[in-house]
Amino acid sequence: MPQLDIVHILMAYLWTWLTITLITLKIKTFKMTIKPKNNHNHHPNPATPTPPWT
Image (cartoon, rainbow, N blue to C red):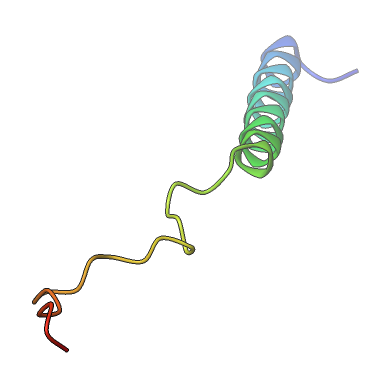
């Protein structure tokens, strides 16, 4: 039977790994549900306005 401190170290390692894995999965799914902020359909106004006589 392994020593008690090895069991505690293993449990701490597994708990940390599980926590990090679940957090990264949650962040990935959260990023997939959010729409991107940049709008590709937006056309900026021209720098110089078109003169009315053209």
